[in-house]
Length: 137
Image (cartoon, rainbow, N blue to C red; front, side, top):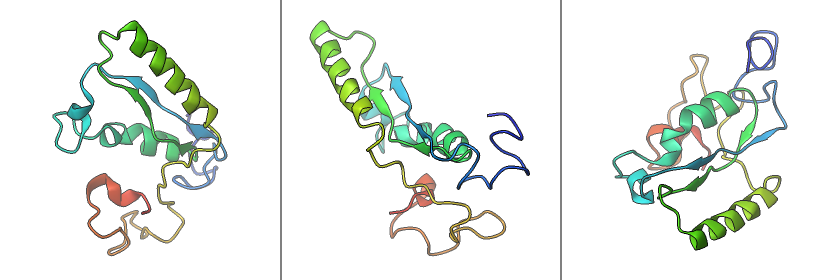
């Protein structure tokens, strides 16, 4: 992720075809809290918002196509049978690593942003707000 390799004036523009274009990125996390704590009205906010700096600001910035994260909630004390189920689910997710659709973030060069790198008015989906405006509908 170093300057002039993954980003910088000598590499393709960020948030588009950057230096790491063609690669996919999957965040896999374990979370001690319940899934509801990472929902719209959850105390921690949506997991997609919490991970936005990595998904968008690191992966997408350098051209990688981020996938929806894989999360295991309530991970502090996982019963043996649940652990087995999570391993199977994670295996299925890894099997789809190259077929799942990436998060549809907008490109910097696609005409949705002005020269000031701000999203142009009216480009976002109806009702979209917050960080959601940076993804295509």
